[in-house]
Length: 392
Image (cartoon, rainbow, N blue to C red; front, side, top):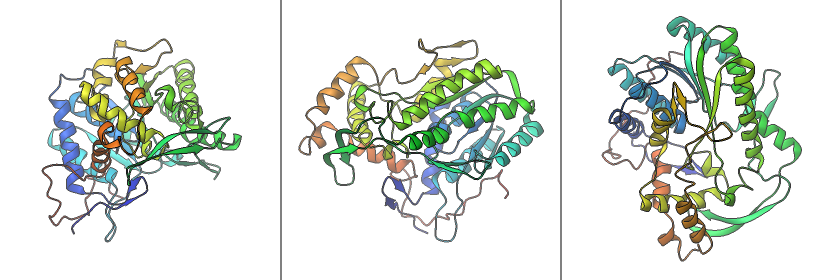
């Protein structure tokens, strides 16, 4: 079939297998062109099919030569419906890993569930014995717990409403938006979904099963951003969840004896960030300025730098709070001052000149395998692609 992008809101409902494969191939090409990562060799990536999780798996496998187990929650093709981008990404990853002689297996299911934890531990014990790195990169909108309760996260402020500029990316229009504060219940639910409770459950389960090395490292990803986005992000409902994530890292290190870190990453186009009011407009300005200044990075550049530069086995570079700061280039004074200067005057009339909307859309579509040079989108392709290690 001929596969074209179909969008609904901030997601694309189709994905292109050849485009996703090429996207993965290029990320592999990038990390293999860099100096090798000298770090963990048996890595579990929880949330490994897109964005930072996928880039982490690629970096550790193809530059670090690590055996990897990935946890995904993706859909295969069905009838005329394509598979999800994460499914195609994972299929491509395993294909390239096999060709390169790398161990790579994947489990598809709800990472929050006890069942997936048990299956993962069984696979680790069977094939790897123990893991020496656990990457927690989940970005789920909801979580079902063992007692049958389902919690949903919200993207709201805390305490007071907040009004600022936002962008309608489809129509390329700037307008003001007011975000209402979350209720206490919504904040609690958001922490349940996006906080550190499940991360700690994973490490505890691995410890109990003797499936994690004593000197292992685990890390989760976060974002802080500039003051401009703080009411919506750092000080908002999602920020409360990220605070919980940070405190959980300290608990894991202190109580479970496994070194745990938070990596504060750069603002990038992801399915998660596209849904946050105000943030997409900030990203379009940030992209424009960082590309002009020559310090822009995408997911793969960020994750390679994390594992090669910041997280070496004998030396971890952190800030005064113990967090790894991969947002160091985004937060450079010359970058933020330039963003704030443009933010104060941005309008419909100046948008094309001052914002990188084309770059935003390019990154958005490439997440789903579209708009990638060298891919023939007029070709007839089979959407039914198998992930070799997934037999169910």
